[in-house]
Length: 87
Ligand SMILES: [Zn+2]
Image (tube, rainbow, N blue to C red; front, side):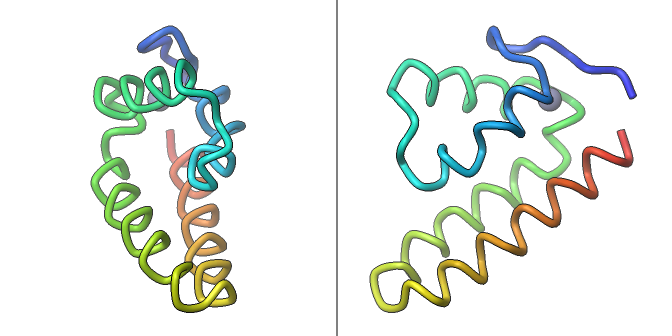
């Protein structure tokens, strides 16, 4: 696979911090880089839209049920791993 450097981060770096990004634990400067990468990288763009909607549902579900949120997170990470393999 060919990694791209978009927004100051490579694909593998984005994937490495994605769980922190979803958890809201990432510092603001890194959040901006991740979002710039997801918007600007053709490799990551194909699941970027799906990713965004999953983050939204994760946020909603985590308010009602932390267990449901974990389930969403697991599906998200599985999808990202698949996307990485296909690149
Ligand atoms: Zn990428």
